[in-house]
Image (cartoon, rainbow, N blue to C red; front, side):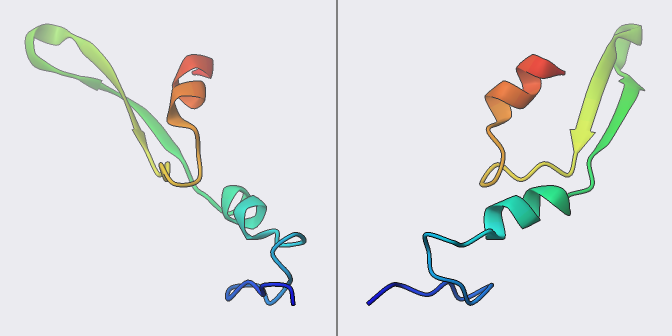
Amino acid sequence: MAVICNTCGLPDDLCACGDLDKDSTHIIIRLETRRFRKKGTMIEGLDPKINNLGNVAREL
């Protein structure tokens, strides 16, 4: 018997919860001035469980 996803109710091989979570995320990217006038990029809203943060950081 196939295992059913608790979130969407579909079998695990057809489950699309991960894709839906990626589509519904809201990411905020802002530039901040830190100590000694150094600029830093602040990224908020990324979930490390869903996203591969290394690849996202490389692309940004």
